[in-house]
Image (cartoon, rainbow, N blue to C red; front, top):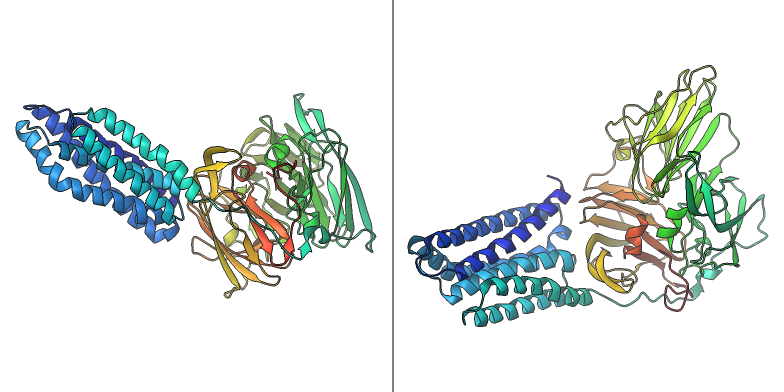
Length: 623
């Protein structure tokens, strides 16, 4: 069974354990002399609770073999509380329940209280998962244990005086969950990241007037009604078109982009997704600049040193801005080459899935024998699956970095994570080639040679291509200057002014997540653990990372340098990052809704500071 499935089973068992123990206490509390049938029901519920408790111990033991991150709060908090309660309840409630089943004898108040308290201990297990999480800090453990002890005393006092056990049990379980939440959330908090240093991010920019050919672009962000090829009209935020203008450069060019904000009241910026620009050009509101408000402008400059497929988008209220259309593609080429080069961003807006700029199937004529390069760009919040029919192809690059010795692929689909890019290469055959997206049955791209009749394309479900086993392997580093661990999860936390089911990093939410601090030149190893049930495409700004392992297994294929690596539920990734681009950088889940709900950390170089602020009296809200 996969790790995330075991985690789900563990949570289900925890809920069941609490319900069964409380149920046994409630049924036993309602017994009167001579009610053998009710006594047998109480025995059955208690027996089922013991079985479920034993099953949970087994599940936790299996999870412990997958990593301490998956079980810590269970081992140091939930199970000890439950087992202590069971050991107290067994010698008192056990004989009383057996007697009730045999002759209808009424259990003592202490026996009934012990059953209910064991149920509260089970409910504390729910709180430990949904509120405490990893790491289980001492203050949170002590708070929940104290709440449980107080409830046990109250239960004894109420039930001992002939109170209503059903009402007491239900109310106490609610108290465990509700009262523990703010206490544990407060205990897991921290101070807002302080960014001090002698070098400001504003000095880490490309100066105007740098030598070399200059590629100048002007973009204007505005609200716009866009008529899609299907005739549907959507209200969008655009950089003049949907997607925004395709920016292209040749390796070595100086790229200069002036961004104006016409009427986006929330503000805008430009982040170069995957392009390792100088820090002051990164375009993150509140970190490297202030948001560009209506009537304002900002000019970005960077040297196009790395050829590859990239994209750009606003990083001011980015979850909303990107979804509404503030994005476009950036392609840096080594030199003009022969053949056909097509960049295909995929984006969902108001339920319409655009493949390229179209929400319907588009046809393009390509002569047989022509080299073709398809650059797939996923600009959405979640993964997309692509199938390419009619030809075998090679995956020649991922996230702008070339694959070593790529071989032909056929009969597999490509799962491109949110923010990720795959470059495919093939020679056009004398038949139609169709690109289809699983989530877009009415759109796609069909390439056909002259004289070949056009037809539809359909997504063909097949095994998923695994990039970790593709291409020619290379050496991986084994020594590192620093180690960091990021455990991704969901707990109840205060975020964005409210108490909500947030997305956490090591039990905390932005801006309370401590930064990853590095020195220039460091090689750091980062372990990323997904304890949740959702995929987290992790995106460090300003750097690519080298994949070291997934679930403990190193890649057997080409070295993978990624800027967006997709940590699926229950997975553990290890990546290496070379600290060679000084600054204060965001690293976050590129499901931007997750980032907006807390899943953000900073990568901060020693000696570098940011004069900008997020929130407060500013307009800066990067997520």
